Length: 313
Length: 178
Image (cartoon, rainbow over the protein chains, first blue to last red):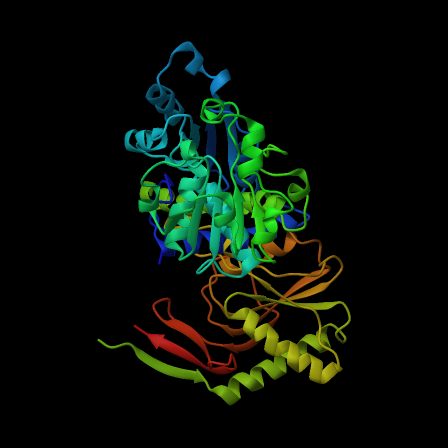
């Protein structure tokens, strides 16, 4: 079955078959990253704009490297240095970008739904969501699944604990959709102020009373970043208290399965959601996540390019 | 109208052809030193495996065996869309090696062009030689095979299919007329 999505806006609109195709394609592309010559001509002549209206190092770099390894021309613009600061609307910015005939726009935006808004208004180019507000971060969930599959050999039937600020986490939301579609079970834990009511309706989700219930016998423990620059300060009494009740450390990690893996979307706050001993421990696969990020983004760029090229023919 | 199929090479014929190719490869390269076999997915890699078994029987030792998937090097993304990408597996350096590229059917030559581009990304082989089970003509690029199992004149409307058994042994070659 061929891939049909011109845009990647979220995991919610992908099927299980789509996710499997993306992961398999990512597995195949991963080999390139180990070569001496890390470049294939697959997307030669394509132009990819990385429009990041919100701070990012890892994701932007990862998308840029992914595009370059496929021989596409990648250009970055960031919110603070673009004409957005002069008051241009998002739609005008995007239409101006589209007038220069790129093939794919990768967008990160602080407002939920910004990529969807652009996808409806742009005529030719594909839109890939690199994180929109508190909504979705599809490429992160896909690299997480790729890493889980690599370490556990499967996703179906895994018990995955996701701990932290669920309310504001697009990583959590995309993972809940992706893991549920793939047949894993998600357990959520976090302070009451950070657990939105009704979250269990998004998928195969169990809301746990505390961290310990969530990580007990888990196959995967995913710690979310406490977003110090955002709302967290008003939602938490103190970081020390958060670390005490919701931080992963060498003691409570023992509740998880012996071969459990520890994941974090980065950047980590050492000593807050994850102790430095766990962050550097043998169970952590955090750098594998980063490595797989390039491969899975190559897969996304490749798959949407095929659909985009066929339509413009 | 139903498609008509003719068997143009039966199992014994395929096995004889592969055996002859194995001998020819060893004769041309004066043994198996510095030889590597790389099959093009998804059927050339199976054939390369069989060739390697035969080379092992003749020389007493098999040569390094790899597989290349050429989807990333195709020139028809716009016509075909994003085809599924298989794994390329070349876990050894190609520098200074005589690479025998193996495919089932040689047709336009575009697949071979893509495969050679891929091989160049893995190093600088001393030579690349092409072994195919069937050469059906209609080249669109200046490419020829060094080792051919059987030349089969075809029309562009026809299809040539190399069929394997469930356990990946070659069964027969079919010519399918529209």
